[in-house]
Length: 128
Image (cartoon, rainbow, N blue to C red; front, side, top):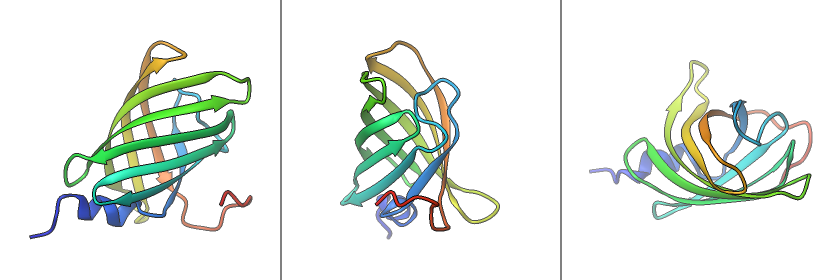
């Protein structure tokens, strides 16, 4: 029997994602997320757009679900942190998608919903 985190590992490990929709958040056009997974533990870095630098840590919670804690420093020097619960999916083109419900823990109030799509072609800028 396959471990519950195996599907998420296959869809996220060493892949990059761009923002598809995040109307209430700070990440947006130009923000790129790079995920790593080991033994069901998730880590990622992100930057671009309004984000100078950001990191995430989390865990796989089911065959297609994850939960994360995130933190970032914005270009304006704001320090923000929050939580998210997400679903890993696949779009019509075969790209991995991420859909989250999230909220702020520090630096802002409120929260929202956001979605992301895998970057399958080489990005215009090198975000390595």
